[in-house]
Image 1 (cartoon, rainbow, N blue to C red):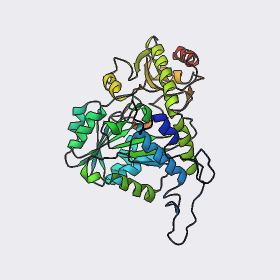
Image 2 (image 1 turned 135 degrees about the vertical axis):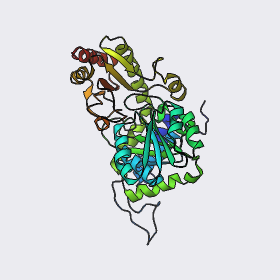
Image 3 (image 1 turned 90 degrees about the horizontal axis):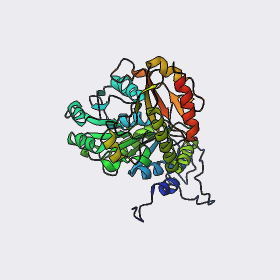
Image 4 (image 1 turned 45 degrees about the vertical axis):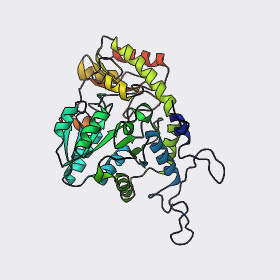
Amino acid sequence: MTSPTTPGFSTRAIHAGQDPDAGTGAVVTPIYQVSTYKQDGVGGLRGGYEYSRSANPTRTALEECLAALEGGDRGFAFASGLAGQDTLIRALLTPGDHLVMPDDAYGGTYRQVARVAGPQGIAHSVAPTADVEAVRAAIEPGRTKIVWVETPSNPLLGVSDIAALAEVAHAADALLVVDNTFATSYLQNPLALGADIVTHSTTKYAGGHSDVVGGAVVVARDVFVPTMKDAADRIAFHQNAIGGIAGPFDSWLVLRGLKTLAIRMERHCDNAEAVVAYLRAHPAVEKVLYPGLPDHPGHAVAARQMKRFGGMVSVLLEGGEDAAVAACGATTVFTLGESLGGVESLIEHPFRMTHASVEGTALEVPRGLIRLSVGIEDEADLLADLEVALAARS
């Protein structure tokens, strides 16, 4: 039961960092569409604001809300999920350092680590992060500074044991960073399980309406690694120095989306469970990937660390790539498009779309895979649309 001094999730989502405006009483945080601020004498800043790259009241409200929802010490809002990740890597790693990342990571994350951070001297290894011992074996003692995890992963919906990986990372004096985009702060709390830093593409479920691009980084109150106790300060410095910040209107849109995150996620989960049940019984489907299924290899871990199993479903079709591409082109309720987490349902072919950049690497995804972002439309309409799509696969 929630303590009276610790507001529940939805209460925090609606109120954290969002006191009514002192001047007008406005109950919604204003959009401070401003680049600079009047000073009361040289250095006399009002509320610490001098220039909106460094801080903006709308972004501050969002960052405080993000930290409250993740149970973290400090939150940082960025122009995209990748901007947040890039800032984190630059802030915490130096040439010669090493990180371990999933062998089923989002293609954009792999591209960033391998092709941007790599030439700058940051080494990496990939490992199946669902296998704790494989992660332990991939760590290079004295050199590995970050273990990076997506759980559930994109797009194969692999599940990693956050608490166990935190122990492995910390034993090597490395930080555990968890991309919590698929699960959201409503369904999963990595910091409470021992993670040091959480990242999000707030473009997805946090914003929730496919009308904003953004990212977030949240740092735990107690970072385990002694040499990284100043992780939040380092990220804050680099956020300002690099400048990939979330603008005022984008911050306002994400803040608005967070207010309804809890009720949206419940509907996403309801619809995803119905879609999974339908697809499991369909003869055109080879396999359904969903952590809520008892035969999913990570089901027990997901049941332990997630409130529910989310709105993302991946499907392997009989007939391989041609069948998958045909099905993706035959839907009308499911929109063919990249991204995920909006109120509308999306369908995509990861091999040719979101994960094309990892073709030929250890992260290459199956050609017959379809990824569904199950929205909040009426269940019957979603199932009818999938019936048409699967009929078109041949």
